[in-house]
Amino acid sequence: MSLTPMMKQYLDTKESCSDCILFYRLGDFYEMFFDDAELASKELELVLTGRDCGLDHKAPMCGIPHHAAKNYVSRLVNKGYKVAICEQMEDPKFAKGIVKRDIIKIVTPGTFSDNDFLEEAKNNYVMSLFTDREISSLAFTDITTGEFYASSFPIDYNVIYDEISKYEPKEIIVPEIIENDILKGINERFGVSITRRKGEYFKEAARENVHKSFQDLDLDKIEYAMMFSINGLLNYVFETQRSSLSNISSIELYNVENYLSIDSNSRRNLELTESIRDKGKKHSLLWVIDKTSTAMGGRRIRKWLEQPLIRKKEIEDRLNAVEEITNNISLHEELKENLKEIYDIERITGKLSSKSVNAKELISLKLSISKLPKVKEIIGEFSSPLFKSIHKEFDLLYDVYNIIQNGIDDNPALSVKEGGVIKEGYNNEIDQLREAKRNGKKWISSLEEKERERTSIRSLKVSYNKVFGYYIEVTKANLSLVPDDYIRKQTLANGERYITPELKSMEDKILGAEDKLMSLEYDLFVKIRDQIEENVYTMKNTAKLIGDIDSLNSLAFAALLNDYVKPEINSRGEICIKEGRHPVVEKMLQREASLQMIHC
Image (cartoon, rainbow, N blue to C red; front, side, top):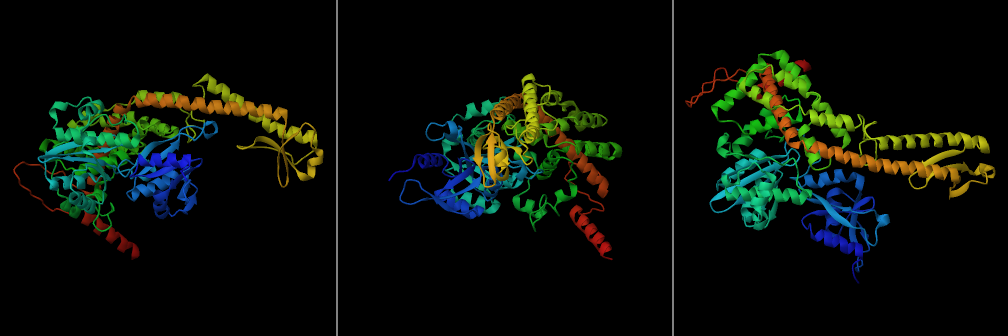
């Protein structure tokens, strides 16, 4: 016995992603077979069945509806699994032989990019680690925001542990040569998914790849280990996303000594971003000071807390900016109100880069951009050096706004492939097709009343479904009144469905217009999307500045709310605290007192 052609195609595809659970598209379902089916059926609580595959025994099989894939993928990724999405690359109706299929994306814990299942105020990092006998290098990226960081230092696993603790990556890419005991220790300590690749994965064409992605980076000034860790991470992004991402175009090289060193145990015990008790944000320092209004600000203030500054000037610049806001409460409140109206520009930019953005998200982007002039006007009132620098860099993204305003409907459909996304008046052909579609549907609506009068069948209905198209439905009791020009299309238990030459002709016109309209609208949407994508770098920079503004405003709000004072920074190594209060303990005591008053 031999495998069926379809099962052979499945196994060939599976061989190319052996460390993934393969979602293999068959019609309206993603199917899993053999070991994947047995594993997925347990993890997702699916019914395990079998399918003839050409062998003596049926292949274990389970499946999910394609439209519900997001939820199932999320559940598997959150458990640490990787999922390869294999799609049909041609319409089965026109396929000659077996339908062509290919993997379009691999979803992993570190490259998961669905905003519906990510924490909006927390980055989702994937990390690359490269070491040799003398030096080690780490690279981190969040593909949803385009952030990319890299650092190198003399090999020291304590420093590596501290950086992992700081960034909290969901996945780490490592060369196979790294010892299992070290990887086991990392996994047990941080609960992070680890992916191993051959050494050449990091080294091959490293200089060329890194230069292609980061053209402003002086490659002669970075160490070889850093080059390899960056290259390994870029390769992994390409491997999983099946393309380079335009939002990954700039890199921040940092020295671990530029920030206050906090070892992973101290970071945990200090409860900076999460409590020891339940790993949640509540009862952490972040819980007290995070009063941000945007997702970008939420991620930014978390980063500031995880990477405390150590340079006196940088600290004072930030403190002076916060102080200036606290001295201008009306501007603070006005800023907060406008920031609340800004969506997550950073992650919308990431979706543009991965070609997964929809029209509603572009409208959210347009609405966000409409708030930028007022935000810039407000920060222009401040005179501190940090705000002056932000004001100078702040781009209002007028080009992006105009592209969306001119081309995208203000209330578009969710799916970009089913029409209803291009604005009226943007394209003559689209307007004409819409008019033809509207007129045709008006004619269909009037047909029902016209045929009821002609046939004297008051219960006659003109309806539509995707399988049979438009039809006239008549109950059994009225079949004797059916005219001779009605052509039987389908027999039902309660009656018959018919078509007329006139109805068939109009159906062809309506459905032809709909098909052409959907195709044309999608093509235009792609052009508009690509035009906007040309502005990715500027959008990313503006999003970062919004995060900075929001974080400064948040710190000012926390200071006003809790009566915090501006510290004086010295470089003499002296600490003098008068009437100090523990911010988290104080907040918890206040809450307890409030609850007691309520109970009384």
